[in-house]
Length: 258
Image 1 (cartoon, one colour):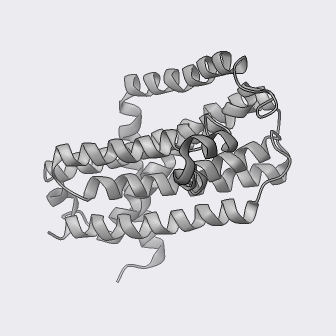
Image 2 (tube, rainbow, N blue to C red):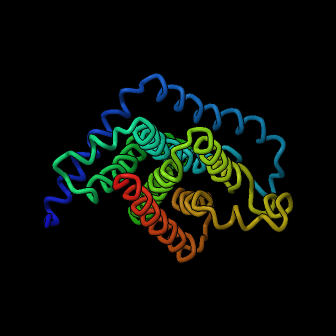
């Protein structure tokens, strides 16, 4: 029986490996950073003069918290792709032979995704401060909690998606669908009123998206909006986080024990 201290240590060792692998893909990282900055500049410049100022007075400030969300989403989601490759190549046979518990292995992979999210998001946090101003201490705590919950959720969901099947084509299709839903079916790029009009009965998909919930908190924390339902948004993120953790653990363990 492994104690809590040993479990945490084993999980941290696994997460360190995943974090080091993240920095090995330097060209991919540079491309993602450029893409996120391009989202901010291009969308900001184009939609600034198109969007109704009654709905969005300043589109640059509207989309900046959304870029914070996307940075966490994109970076944390990478862990699932690596897990999927390892399953197809049967690297899992090596992983289960390591002197660590399977629970610590799963926790370490999820933690690795979380750390990737925090590291990648750090530069965009600085950018958000330069554009929107410095939040107060209590708002910083909200930002930290939101980033932690969102990174854990996305890391868990990415592992879940990658362990649903070993078929590469089916796995890629599921990942693309999930990626599309989280990326575009949210209030990152569009106000909620526009989403309600365009999506109609499907609008709740955006309303209950963890990305939308996180964006709402970021916008509140950086002062873009003055009020937000913290109970709904934080509570919703907690529910998504727990749901993602349980699914990731169950499906990853299933593949490890096959």
